Figure: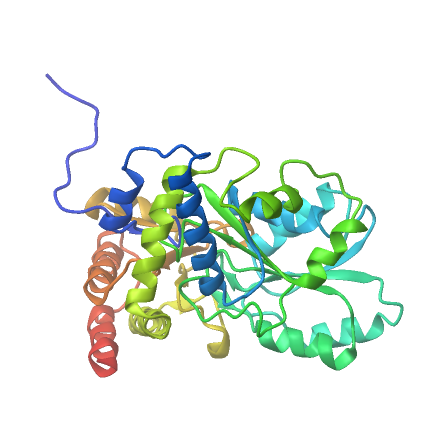
Length: 394
């Protein structure tokens, strides 16, 4: 009897996409506990614990709203609670996710002005300064900033962007997508003067997809009364009122909340400075491997390298989808695909979340073996180069 099913591959499946990331066993066990009554005292205590914990993760003393939904929903919540139809927003384009946020804003009835880039660099601070400086009537109501652009592996400087707004005295709201940076890269909502930070559960927070977050400044809260975009499910007000006692206006993601409480505990047990240093180390080791292979990273600016994902440019004439299939079929490892303008041109190595040195070495070994198996032009020695970086960092 024959079967068309793929052959069994022994060993652990390596999930090396830049999200969803690997979920730690203690988090999985918490999610698997019996579901709590979301209107009972046990859940209220859990919710209050998680909300306070997420404030520590965001580094804010202000409110954090937790939605049952994806990061895309949190994008929408950010916009509809603060803006009105026809408002102008400035969207510095660094990759596919910044483009998608701009497209969603357009669909909601906002006027979106893109600040284009070559998708190889972070946000151009001086270009941003020039554009905002020319906005002497302050028509731009908000900036849509993607902190860590996972489609291309670039990291933008949120503190510098806040500095531009302050230098110019520009009143625009500062909105930041920290979906792939929160919990993995240094992020400071209050200190950097962010008005709304958007995040999701499935990356640095080490949970499955299904929860998203808005961390909110007082300035953003004050805009609710004048905001005229339609909102119902995503409205902050009922969440903020009921959250005071640990409850929600709609059915919350109860089991994911239990997992999140454990995940916050794991993050704090490791220590955020240690987490940030670990991700920086893994980014450096991965890029060392890429350069040793004779390949090129999509990010062309050393100062803007992402610590959590490396996008690798394929040699001309070689398709990333075919290469990723070789990796998956041969070694049971999933790599990220190219998206948007770089679809077919790059593959992405995720190195974030519940991730250690040995896992990184295994992932890079799988890439190096697969480059040979797929006959992609390259040099040997990438894994050795990464090992040298890891050894020096230790």
